[in-house]
Image 1 (cartoon, rainbow, N blue to C red):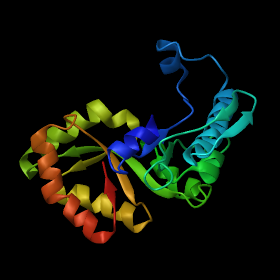
Image 2: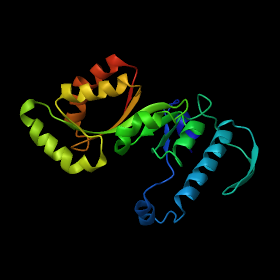
Image 3: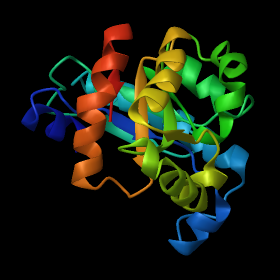
Image 4: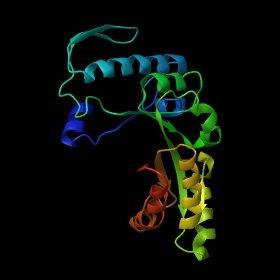
Length: 215
């Protein structure tokens, strides 16, 4: 399905994936009661299969979790593979998967302060970060926006609030430290006016610093 969507979108798909580190969320949707180690191992095996599927050639796989005989993945992705983003920051169960399989490591906002340390474990993967954003249009509404962002997003970690210049300052520092992409959540959940203000006043300045992906 990912390869089909990649072809339909002319190679624009990027596949974000993780092994599921929040048991409560998994329980809500009845997904699994496996241990963290089992979920990580299942994802590792799944990523190995995914890479074989991207080749478009038939293959067999006899693993711990999956068994395939004569499997084939078609159509092939436009560029030969769909870029894989692996999110998370655990040094034991997540970062080895990043180093082995990921095109991108997506550092979650709760691990922002440990990003440089964890990045040493990410192999050749490019780095993106999650950032919750409280973006004020003017100085006069900065306090109100900061309060709302803190209430809604503060527990996530890595919160950035302020005017366009203040938000851009932080994102530019991230870029200077090797971050190449951002996945952003806004205080008002991405109202059109806020997104337009960000793209007009913040994104151009950050992009001037580096070649970035902003989502």
